[in-house]
Length: 154
Length: 108
Image 1 (cartoon, rainbow over the protein chains, first blue to last red):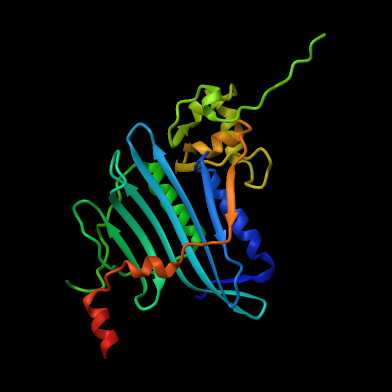
Image 2 (spheres, chains in turn yellow, orange):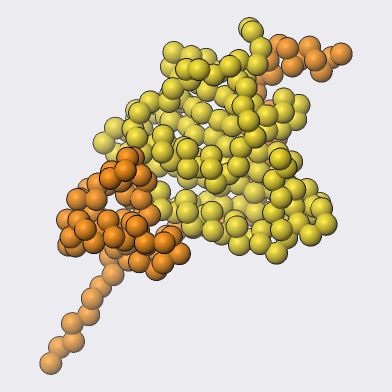
């Protein structure tokens, strides 16, 4: 189902989501909305370092909307949770839900033992995906790629 | 008679709090000098209530309070910037290596 945001509530949604991200860190939360038309892009970025483990967890969300009567229809998204290796900026694990051309809706999952691939997915919404990622982050458990269905055999 | 002025902390370090991504309800109660029950009551308030405390539920009675939520509870304002230069979905897509079947499908 296409995701639609009424024009009147768009800026408020950006601010509210940024506020929600601010609960995760006392550092800066970066939200961006280019307010362009007919294609409007938004993004959010939060990086949370853990001084004890040296691991940085990054929430990186991007969406793209096109103008329709009365509001904005989402055309593309990229929601990512990245975990760095201790004391390093190198990627240790990543979980991502994407919907964009030309691949369409798919997900990525990457760990030290499993290289990246396109996996089957369903359409994702920002709020629900963020809740899943926060749950993953708070549980402290490593990213698990088991059970995903590859979209293609290598 | 001198007036006692309560100074708001600017960082969690001002409160002598060890930095970590999440805190237990007991740790938050200890830092904020409130009861465990008060912390739980705040978590259970509606999210639009001014005294609501954001927490991640790990189980029916287990919560973790992220550092930002603790900071805001301590009166430290959030540092949120809303800019006008979003990172693009297309940049994330460009980094991808499309799977073989999709590449084939596109060439047909």
